[in-house]
Amino acid sequence: MKLISWNVNGLRAVIKKNFAEFVSEHNPDILCLQETKARPEQVDLPLEMAGYSHYWCSAEKAGYSGTVIFSKIEPISVQQGIGIDEHDREGRVVTLEFADYYVVTVYTPNSQNELKRLPYRQSWDRDFLAFVKDLEKNKPVIFCGDLNVAHTEIDLARPKANRKSAGFSDEERAGFDQIVAAGFVDTFRHFYPEKVDEYSWWSYRGGARAKNVGWRIDYFCVSASLTDSLASAAIHQDVLGSDHCPVSITLK
Image (cartoon, rainbow, N blue to C red):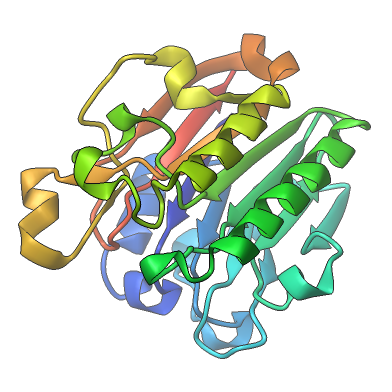
């Protein structure tokens, strides 16, 4: 069972690039996308998506945010959002329930320049963690997406220069600490606790991607009870088309 997550930074744009080839090559059972920037009726899906059902959560604001899950397996139930209107207007979460676990894709709000949206971001972090912990009362949870935080210093190329930047503030990192404290496992670090130079996002400025001056801000996190089912976790830095690259896990 292969699950892939990718912030595509505009689904209509990436479809015109390498999206169909990416799907054909990797052939995920479940594909979670963030920052779709589109409603489903605005997107002409390639033929490679014919075997998937799709479940969307679009923002009220046109061309902004948005998430979707493509799945070859029919879910038991589907939920858009986390049940809090303040958060759900931005189309940031889709949840599919399967027999043995939930799959949640999330596009976490950015704290923005000068951390002007940090208070809202902290509220989001608390409410999203409460949401997935509530799901976990019923069955294990897999959640993935752009969490907009590099957790530790090895998760970005230049930690000292970005100490107070959005995505590496003490407050945002503490939010990820709470995810770990709540029992969720960062799957990439589960397999590669000390691995460096593995990033999932690069600025478009200054040739950052060519120089690998990046950040690891895209994750798969799972309930601790699922760790024995993990076969692998990967970051696909060779996949272009967005300022993010896909991340994946394989379950036994």
